[in-house]
Image (cartoon, rainbow, N blue to C red; front, side):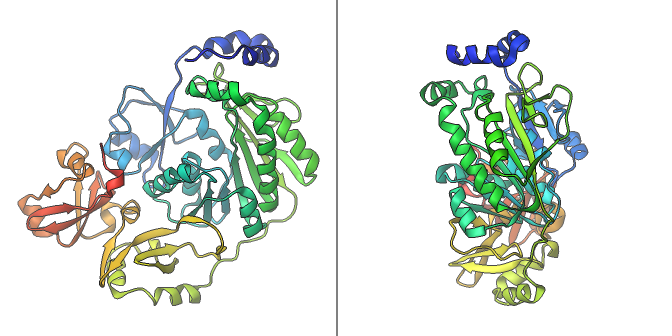
Amino acid sequence: MAKLPQEFLDRMKVQLGDEYGDFEKSMNEKGYAGLRVNTGKISVKEFLSLTPFSLTPVPWTENGFYYRKEDPVTKHPHYYAGLYYVQEPSAMLPASRLPVTPGDMVLDLCAAPGGKATELSVRLKGDGLLVANDASASRAKALVKNLALWGTENGCITGEMPQKLLDTFGCFFDKILVDAPCSGEGMFRKDSSLVDAWVEKGPDGYAGLQLDILRCAVKMLKPGGILGYSTCTFSEEEDEGVVRKLLAEESGLTMLQPQMTEGFASGKHPCEKAIRLWPHRVKGEGHFFALFKKAGEPIPPVSIDEAEIRKSQRRMPECIKDFLRDIPSALWQNKVYQEIGEQCFLLPPYHLPKNLRYLRTGILVGTVKKGRFEPSQPLAMLLKASDYPSVLNLPASDERVIRYLKGETLELEEQEEKRLKGWVLLCVDGYGLGWAKCAGGNLKNKYYSGWRLQ
């Protein structure tokens, strides 16, 4: 790794005292690689019976695991089926400790590339709303892909500054996560390029930004709502210092004690209830997490009534209605139908503000061209082999799976050709990968070109 700045090391000696020697040694060791199972699609037990990789549990989250860095986890078909997300183990902490429950209105304010947002969406279990926001348009593109790959059905993705969200939503959310931009000290071991950025900016340039973001978040939080604040820095200026200023300004906020796990450390005053992850104490990088509750009684969300949902769905073209009859009604019957040009969407049943930059809202079902419906890649990621009548379900070991992910046309075996027709859902080990179209004994590949295996 890159040489650590002496100014940083001198500060850490003061901050850690007797533990500094262990910390310095850990910063010269190799870090850890992790993946998190998508329990919205597959149970941990079933995944462990299916995966070929040697995994060991991450202690602070039930669906997190360490894997060997030499294992090609991002090349395996199960990754393309959205069965797991590759995530640094310590970064799994914030979403695991924000107490999201079905029916909540949830905001992930700095969400890209989507590691935390994907877990928050799973915890909603299809009931409630996730707004995943990132002000960076380039970073938000990864957010759109990752939430689609994950099979998120009740979310919307925005690309706005926090103040614009506050001006538009107002006091709207039950749970908010602020995984704030920071100096990245906790990731020095993992990404040496962050050291150069630290030399240029240091912690000073971030604390004010973090406090401004949190001020907006508090105002968007309903009475009785819960706010999580996380960083991947060791800097007390960005962690305890920001929390101290926030609590001084917001008398209605109190700190909560998240569940502790062996190896966790607490913060310094006023963050005795916060969690610090140190690389010399846990198998992971540096992280800070604090949890707050806003005073007052919770306000229940107001959903769109059934009559309005039915009215929107009556506008569906017949070709879409015919297609949807073949998939589970739970995916579409309580969603609002909307067309934008040729694209067709099923939206969460809540009144969303109009004047925001939405990158994706709800489920992109597909497109209608000249009266013909073509299902979308995100829709395929919501389905299992048992959810659709015309399915080619292949084991991960079948060479046609890799060929499909590369965008190639597939040849059908005789029995497959007899039973398959029209649009075919291609699955791996029972989980959707994408669409293909039957044509003369072959499957014409419709896998989204931007996702193909290189």
